[in-house]
Length: 123
Image (cartoon, rainbow, N blue to C red; front, side, top):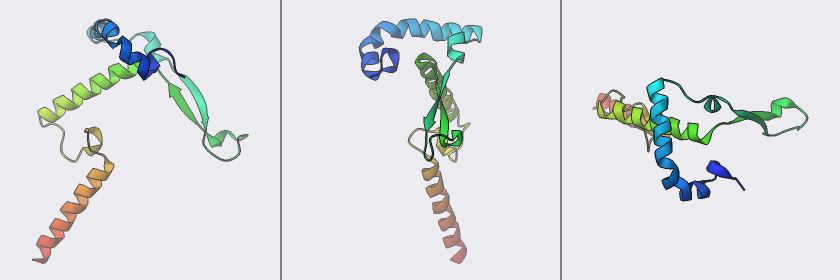
């Protein structure tokens, strides 16, 4: 079982206690254009994929980083995407970066427009 902030169950119960200190930390990081050194470090662990376990190519690296850093990145990403969408800077074709969309919705949108274009050409 996970322990500390990486455990969602634990994080749920301490969110009220840590939200303001995290807010201060995030503001300081933005004001100083710097992040704590701990956020820049990660533990890279090999994770087995398939095949012979004695061959290194059958493993992929997984980087374990700070949960607080991931939270900060998520907040920043959401704020940037919201700004880009509300200011109409990001187009509708940028499906992968928008909530509720994916490469599949982009492909379906393309196929629909292609089908419509072919239909108009025929008539």
